[in-house]
Image (cartoon, rainbow, N blue to C red; front, side, top):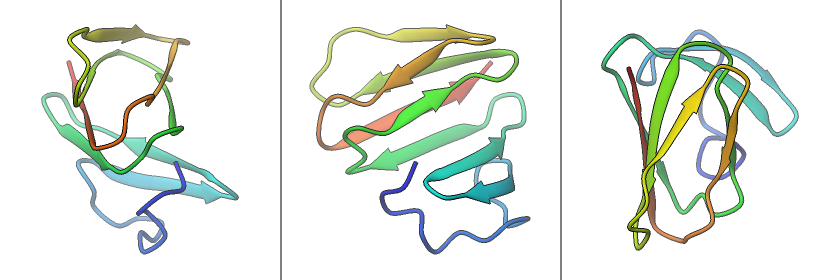
Length: 85
């Protein structure tokens, strides 16, 4: 997740905790019920490492539920949001 996240540092709070940054990839540890907001992130890929993540994006009527090992790619410009369940 490269776009708009260059200012985030390891260990900084961001709807959970940033654990690692490597090239264009960051790992966000989200607490139950926490929200992830991605603005202008078209092309960004979200991987669910564990648990269940609900994803939605602006101008898309479909909701996406990611289980462990599944991925989602933001395909629309604007806001995308994820909720850790």
